Each structure stands twice: as structure tokens, then as C-alpha cells.
Image 1 (cartoon, rainbow, N blue to C red):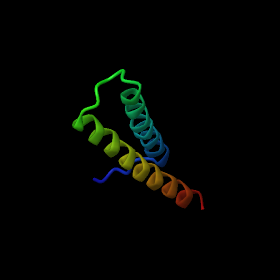
Image 2 (cartoon, one colour):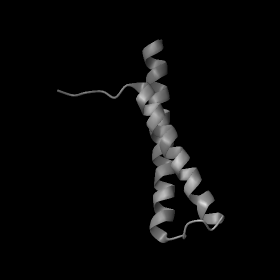
Image 3 (spheres, rainbow, N blue to C red):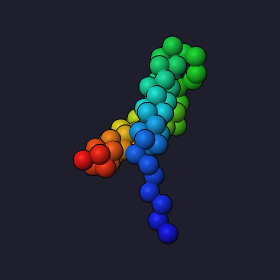
Length: 66
């Protein structure tokens, strides 16, 4: 059986990923954590994934409410 993630949960996950993608570079610029290639790549990936998941969640929510 295929379970579909509710749109509000997708929006929440997208928001959390976007927040992580914003906070990590901020902490690196403030030199509270060390800037490494892995952390930079992870922050970028979290930002892109959060944008995509949030956009899909919003589109699904609009589609369901129409």
C-alpha cells in the first residue's frame, strides 16, 4: 500500500530543512562552527530539498482544497 504524506507535514519538513539551510551558514560565518566541505554541501542540499518539498506540499495543499 502506498501512503501519501499529508501536505501540511510536507510544508513543516520543508520549513525545517530551509531553517537548517539558513542557520548552518549563519553559524559558519559567525565562526561558531567550523566551515567544512561536508557542512557546506549539507546546508546547500538542505536548502534545495526544503524548497522542493515545501513547493510540492503547497501545490498539493492547493490542489486538495480546490
